[in-house]
Image 1 (cartoon, rainbow, N blue to C red):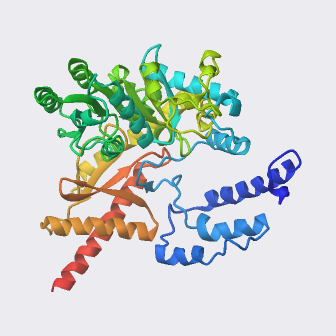
Image 2: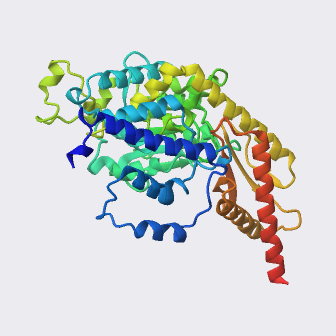
Length: 485
């Protein structure tokens, strides 16, 4: 079994095995003509359940053949231009190369003596991102597993930085977090994990463009102060999951300053604007944040996972610091040994920063920005198509690259029946494998959603998928009328 260990004696075997795997994936990518096969859970589950994991195949080629059957054949391929569903981007080749390198070397980014140059590369990328945001010379941060973890850590720091006498414990019930009604669910989840009450998150209504209403925020902050509560944090969103909307960051920053609240910007989606060549101004005000979440694996075209939490004041990261003699004893601080575990919620942590490093060194920030600008432009084209098409109702003009809409039949007026038609159309489209779209609710009504993150997607693709949706919805409504007659 030692022949399977990656070391100096097995380097050639490693090369052959990885090359064979890469060739299989490359062949699959080259021949995939749909984002999904339409396979069902009931069809796929038995194939996987019948595999006896206690009886290995002892042959890489045989295992890859099996993998083709249970995974590669039916995987959902985000690189396909008609994958339009969630915040999943196609990935750039330099980042995939970085993934291969970091997996093989397997550095752990918790301590210097497990990563060496990896530590310095991650720190340089954090500095680079902070420079792009404009957080100032005292800024710092750390890579995380994703936006939810980044939001959690930011709110942990906000809790610890709250006014004296309002920390965790008996006074935790006084703490309040303010976020828009369309903010990410991880805000409420973080509040629960941090031991705050169920009413700790105050939901602020949004305007027609799905942006936080700052007048309503001001009223709630005043109420908080009047009731003797503590405004722990305001979470502004730069790219909401459902609408891609960007909250009015400058106005929110003013209110945070006035009421002494920590300002966190969840830019997990909108962070791509940091590299934009023409839309960077949409993030105006982000430089005033106390903390920022960025997801490189959304709008920087990086493989999952690649995220970071950034902070204006490096000293606030001390709230995540614990020292263990076997790992990062206190003396290492005096010795100026850079241990990333000192500022992370994780201990063992992948060298995910390498993917972004490789991307920047091959493509440059402008290259990323060009790609993200393309999908934002595409969303504008899609919005114009939807606005001009009487078959559809589109909710809001996009700020980033998301379109939320629903099919509206001319002959049906019952909102519940229209809901069912849209739900059916999404399900039927997924089952066909011709395209993958997402769904959400606007108010109590069901809507469909395109999240456009693939520069290879065209306006013709959007038009074709809209026709498919309309066709499925009309089929459902026709069958429904037949059943009713």
